[in-house]
Length: 213
Ligand code: HEM
Image (cartoon, rainbow, N blue to C red):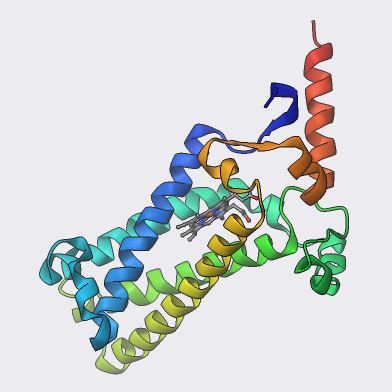
């Protein structure tokens, strides 16, 4: 594909940041499911042994939170909800038929929902995770609080797992999306179809750069 037919979507540091989050998510989610459901106990071996998984799970969670915080600070502005998102949400039946609606910017309403759901569940996982973290912090909290934190931790973990399953499905289902996070670029036709406002902004920027002496 010619250079003109591609648009840069993510730099290398942005992609490394995203894949650190994704890797931590896989380890934390699998080991967490292993602790929670007896039928999934075999998943506790994902980080070596069950004992090691128990020690590493909270540290991996903290790394995931810290790495996602960098993504949050980078992208929160582009994920603010605007009028175009309402049009997108009202026409969700067209979206599932792979039609496009509204003048979408860098992210569509679905992506924005994933973004906000991820930060909310990660904050809840971090706070509840600290309360239940033995042997370091749990001793400082009462038993009823630890019980409540266990519920919050489990519910937000299941919510995040469902949200990320939707995110992965969308990333693979919308043809041309995955190269954005693997190689950093997207086909110009993809951008024009799915993110028309972002496409125009990028083209404008390119033209301005070409005009510069
Ligand atoms: C494990 C497999 C994963 C895959 C295959 C995947 C794939 C992708 C792809 C292709 C994009 C680019 C979408 C675009 O620019 O239009 C993306 C963006 C993004 N991903 Fe993932 N991802 C994964 C896991 C995660 C996890 C675990 C999180 C967070 C907990 C996450 C959070 C994000 C965020 C915040 C963006 C930027 C979009 C936005 O800000 O709305 N991803 N991902």
